[in-house]
Structures are given as structure tokens and as C-alpha cells.
Length: 273
Image (cartoon, rainbow, N blue to C red):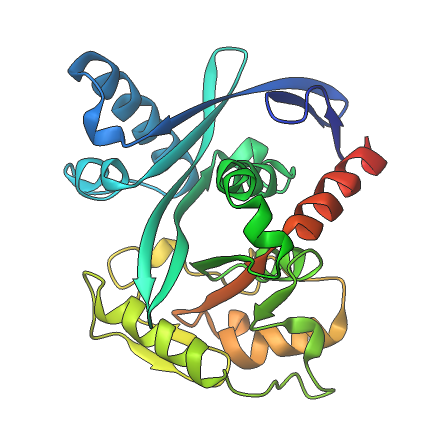
């Protein structure tokens, strides 16, 4: 049983898990590579602890090579324990400026609590404010990320002004239309710029295959999959991601976030509080 109580919209909030309350605070950073060595080592230790708990062990140079190269970073803690983080970088894909959510990792105890969604929007908030007038003139922030979690996609679908793939547009058999030309080009460029550019990418659904050959324990199966309570969305998920067959597949997601998206999200939090 999870509840979220807003305590200061952009500084901290509370999570209740099985009737126990956890106050959550946030630290935000820009350009982690420029931190002093002491702070960097402290953060590296805490990031590694979150990674091990949430995803498992990664190579020693993983944090330095990937996470510390990002442009934005936010980390959450509760009672002096760091429990989750989100890292974001800027990319130019198909001549479009993109906010790319590279990593969003939560310790197991706090997964499915809403903390991940909060980190997602919080890391974008400064750029939404900075570009507020552009957003008002119908130029939303471009967001992209990769995920095998249908709940993440379906949750964002409720707030984004545009999203592909959109599970709520699935037909009765779970299928959707293929990505438009720009979205398809952006997804192709995203993978071509990655460390593993040979992965298979399908235009229908933007399905990426082969990301977890070195970390097979992260592939969902029928028992641990984040199934939805909507039967059509579950058909969509099985058709494209193959949870039941434990297939190494995930979505590349492109979304537009505007001021209304942010308002709808925080209104949703306040109503739940």
C-alpha cells in the first residue's frame, strides 16, 4: 500500500509503504564530471549502492563512463540513506534537441511507490521553467528514454501531450501504428550513437532488442513483469515485449512535455495526497 504526500513540491515529499512513513529529500547536480574528487567519490559510492540494490552489479568504470557524463543528475534520500537517482543528458537527434533520460534507478523497497515518476519530472523541471514561454507557444520539451516497463510508459501517456508508443491507442489485438518518420529517424540515430549500435530496432512499436545480453537477470518474465490492470495494454505489452516468453526487448519512447503536462502531474500528486 503506497501513498504520496506533497511537502514542498520541489524539495521533499513523503512515501508511505505498508503504513510506514518515509520522508524523501532530493539533491540536484549539473555536470557531475566537474565535482571535486571528495564529493564525486561519495556520490559514486551511493550510486553504486542504488545500482546493486535495484539492478545488480555493473563494471567498475560504468558510473564514471556513463552516469558522470550526464548533464543533469538528481538523487533521492530518506533518513540519510540514498534510495534512487535519475540522470539526464542532452542530445540532438534528427536535428531536434532532446532531453534524454539515460538512467532512472530506485532501490527495491521504494519501487512502485511513485518515486520514479517524481524524479522523472523533477529532473525536467528547471528546463521547463527556463523554456516556459517557448512551451506556451506550443514548443514542448522533447523527451526520449528506453524502458522495458509498460507501467512507466502508460503512466507518462496520461500526462504527455504526445507519446510514442502510446499503449492507450492499441487496438483490440494489442497492435498500434508504426512510428512517424521523425520519431523513427530519432530512434535510429539514438541507437547509432550508443555503445551498442548493432541492436535490432523495429519501427512498429519502436522495439529495441538485445540490450540485456550481459544482464539477463533484468529481463522481465511472467512472474515479475509489471503487468497493467488494463487488459488491452497487457495484450499490447505481450505482443511487443513478450514478458511471458522472457524476451530481451524494450521500448524506445519519444514524448512531449509541456506546461499542462507538468500541471496535470502535480495536480495528480496533490489529489492523491
